[in-house]
Length: 305
Image (tube, rainbow, N blue to C red):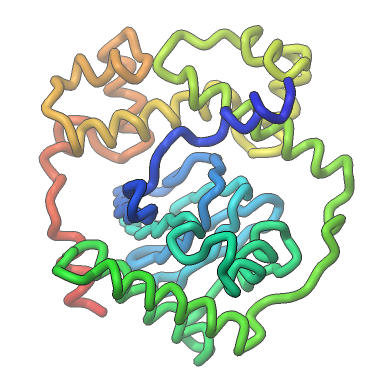
């Protein structure tokens, strides 16, 4: 598969709007277990954990986060999350660098350096360290601005993001590294993993055969299963179900479709199985999940900070 087709296999989601490419995602889970499936996108991302304790994996690095901490995810990095506590809430701010820079901008060199791997930005930020705490405080303001969206919030978003990156470089919260910091073999493995994930993201709403996935990456079905397990510590079938449940939870939040229709839309042809898998992953039934959808968790977040 050539690089052009491979590029089409990343996460298919527009973050924000074309004129303002930035989006906020508030995610709450009510049991221990996966809270963010393995995926990747070209945009940069900050994840702030407001409640609970969680483990996030970014490529081959693992970070244990406590409430009040945040992480940075570079474009193209494969990342996932796992909650260690029954109640866990995080806020994800995803944005395209085009929001902040363009071809003839002096800041372009910095963002190109980040995305190309020349600058390895500090990944895990903790409030106990003053310079890192400043990043967290600015990120919390961005979360508030994206939630309230009062007049002029667009200016505030850009100014806060610029301030964050000025802190990152002035406080030397980055390291310089060569472009070949990963072995060619390791890079090839992640390239293959992205292609597998991309195929699943494109087809989770359909019936997916193991042979279809294996053919898309030129691996035997047996080796595909072994490879995916080694890279993600989860099975192909579990990952497919996880993607489907994440899609279903989004539809439960934003649509008025019946639970049966949502199950069908997300690739489940058996309602009882859908309910069982949903409860196992989310800690409650789809009906209860839908009833919990309101803004109270964000209000609690703001009151408790």
